[in-house]
Length: 287
Image 1 (cartoon, rainbow, N blue to C red):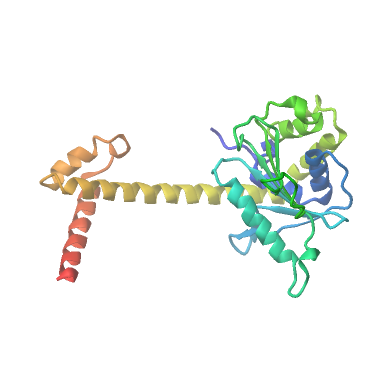
Image 2 (cartoon, rainbow, N blue to C red; image 1 turned 135 degrees about the vertical axis):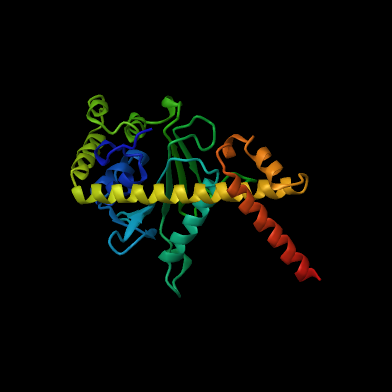
């Protein structure tokens, strides 16, 4: 699949999402769509940064907003299901609570908190657009009232009768951030978000940062693939060396594997020699 240009990105893209949500108005509008309520005077800051280099100091991964009632909102876009959202939401809650309570302050000073994951998949397989979790007593089913809600939104939901049209339109917009989709949208908040996103895409500096970021990610993926490829080859040669008599026989067996069909005899021999050297050194150390 060809890489999209910055102008072609949908809001579900992690880079564009984080950049868009840095704007207080855009973040506030998104939260109002998600929570189906009005929110006032949202301020935004970034709590989690990844440092790449001095020129492009950080790519912002999470968005932390706070309204005038001092309610905090941790807002994240999640495109891949890593099957760890429950524990991640627990960790993020702990991090935010830790940062929000100064030494000597009472626990009563902890402010209400929403931890929100917007998922481009169904995180729990129930085909819901929105999953909301709160702590409660198992025996009597009454709430703990600790002030924390964890919300997981899914773009793959099917239960239209249980959520507002605004939620459905907003989730649809994440994967269709274009003029054609927005013409069918009724909610003014989503239309305004689209206007802000279009403005953002005109920012040439941000577009350059996106291209740089993508190149960094591709470079990291290529490096990771090469390392995994080499480690896999070494492991395969080590296993075969226990059963086959020589390098040539090992090589002929290795190239029967699709993933290593193009590997050279020299590469196999290099792995074999390293394995033999390591085995000899280990034997000496044991003695």
